[in-house]
Length: 261
Image (cartoon, rainbow, N blue to C red; front, top):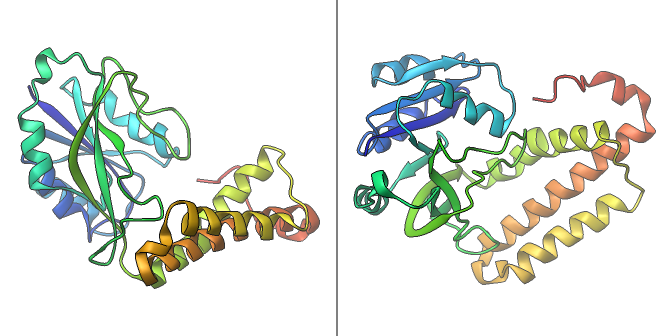
């Protein structure tokens, strides 16, 4: 059974080649949905035979579903540019009888990395996600944030996707401040959610306790502590920025709430 590959990109020249090459072992076509790269991402993808679709970013799930208008196969394998298929995952997919499968999708474990270090705690593993699915039966949820494949009948495969989440600890802390927390605060403010003066502290503390205690970050040594702290910082900043929107009109006017993405 043939499989279509799907990747969404924005300035992923450092990742796109290895990502596509890992998918080519099982995909007979690869669709790259690019949201305006200004580096060599598009050129590199085309040089490897991928079809590139230009689409301004619509949000996570909506963007990933754009490829469904262009694929030629029912089964779709969707991964991010900073992810790679392991040899074991490739072998397990080749062994699947997709033509006669009763399943809507297949989930895989995801090994999230900082640099070359595999983070096994803090909820970062097994971090299961459905990445291979029958597009005639299901697709990603049409949401702008934290989208997942809405398959109801899923088989869990015990092989791994490699996810090079962050290059180093510095990037782990920089990304929440630059992207995630600000975007989340905008979304909450636009939806009418409000914070009080204790919200940043309480949500930050809860995030740390959840990661470090309940998700056993304490077993991960320095990396476990680092991930828990970054989660706390991200949560703290999200609610601090939301509170700032509420109490400082000059800041609110600076941001374009029609262009969150």
